[in-house]
Image (tube, rainbow, N blue to C red; front, top):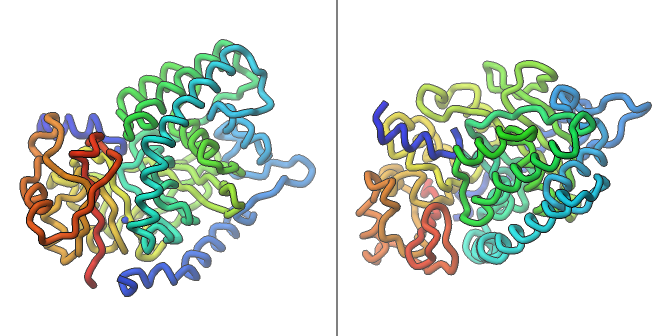
Length: 400
């Protein structure tokens, strides 16, 4: 492995015309797939309390998650710094104040402008029934902002889905330090729009709140969702999702409801997306393919798909996505032409950060001034390029 590729992996968070969107009208397929999952899990999308206080959610015990939706959502709100039934100690109050401040800034500088842009520019894409977000890590923030109507979200990263500690077993100081670590872990993405994986890992591993689950739950609460259940899941060799209980889990299935009551599933898989980890016919991408042709979103992906060692995921996205919304760190600009995609450009790309100097894409710089592609300005930064005057978003729609 080259030194440059090692650096990219070190930073990566992980580690989508009316004709082109006819899959959106194929909501029946997704609904049938969801029904299959519901039958497997023994409940409906919106799960209710179980009878007689029996455990309701498969894997809940193994993850130390309460088996009642109200209790799960209460913990989620605690993580998010929102009102909950937990003791309002000075540290909990301080966590709420810090998270309130982060959220206000994020809403003003990142989420609000991105949502406005998406409503105006990708209305045909953002109403998709499902979306795929490779290299996402636990970034439900941007996934939900761009695709608020999705019923199914598929996220993946290299971070594990570790069990929560039993809060009743923790001292108040352990809870307080855990909340501080959680705040520090989410601060960078809420302020700057991306995770620095090593910092996130360090902040979480130093406390009792580890892995991606606390972050996912906090983001769900902050974006107005009610968390109903957490299941541990894995994929079998044929790409079928199974509820794994106490062993064999490689990911999570979190059921939640939007502020309007729409039921959603958020899948997070610990998944290596290098060629050694995925193939088009392997379990993970077979699972994704069962959603039908859905849009993909790529942000702060460390230019990994510019490397030959990530050609499988790159080619899969170009062959199977109904649309791709990305910053320049995703699929190389040149590859969209090879696969016959139409592109719309936003912002004013002038090159990337020095740390990624091997991936400057002069052809993309030229594309912004060539007149061959529609170009519109942005009033916000995204990904690694936070200056609106030098940022870039690309929207691809396949011609086929």
